[in-house]
Amino acid sequence: MGGDHAPRMVLSGANIARKRFPDVRFIFFGREDELRPQLDKLKPLAAISTIVHSDQVVSPGDRPKTVVRQGRDSSMGLAIRAVKEGKAVGAVSAGNTGALMGLAYFVLRTLPGIDRPAIASFMPTQRAESVMLDLGANVHCDATNLVDFAVMGNVFARTVLGLQTPSVGLLNVGSEETKGHEALWEAAEILRQAGLPGRFHGFIEGDDIAKGTVDVIVTDGFTGNIALKTAEGTAKLLSEYIRQTFKSSFLARIGYLFARGALRKLRQRTDPRRYNGAMFLGLNGIVVKSHGGTDALGFANAIGVAVDMARHGILEKITADFAGLSRTVPAQTSPEGQAAAL
Image (cartoon, rainbow, N blue to C red; front, side):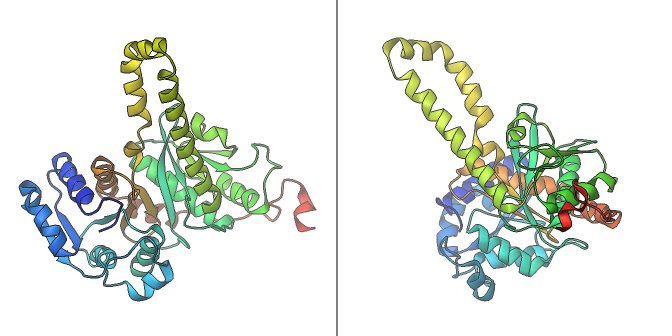
């Protein structure tokens, strides 16, 4: 029931995903009187789907704390409970992000060794795709949280992106070792000695995100969310600039006719629907958050993220990596010696 164009967008997205993943079945949670008529129009999807009725729906303006206390029988709460009870391998929602994270954390809890879950998503780069986390779940993070995010991102890059030796970077105000704050310095020292598969690159700056300098970008949720929204806004701005440019004169319109094939490829490469589906990594279950304003294709891609996570056994691999993680912190974590203690 979540999303700007639900439930039609959700059902249509599942119908697209059905063709991509013919072995997947679906359980839809929400008001059956709204879902049933639309689902019955999609007969192949209806044949492999079940509806679980719930009158209670989480709205975009609901406070997460209130939803956690009172919304456990909502369509969102029942979907997450289905994951907890093993009735579903993952839950996908385009609804209220804070409520989804709150319910998921309360119902599923975290995997062993993980303090807080993180929101992670794909990021397009000049090289390929990277994964960035956290994107808003944790505004304040200490060194332990950042290390946890690095481990989870490393596992995701290896299992879902298929990178055998992913590189990991900590987003900072500069690449120099003297830049940043103590939590970043401490996390960097731990990651240098952690022995994770791949390579710890060190500190990276904001422009390294699009360059593809590293495969896993680690940051706190406050910084990550701003970086993500800035990137999305910049993409829309450039798209509008291009549209205005080709409408600026008769010759520009003629030029568009010759360039439209290349522009079509550009739109496909930068289409946000391709990267839809933010993962809640660290939970003891698979939960994927779709953008609320996406369409059926974008929601289908979010479903695909959940399917990939399940098929690659990402929960088991994260648990295994944390079991072998060394968290030994050197006595002196500041690059300027005793300055950190002043």
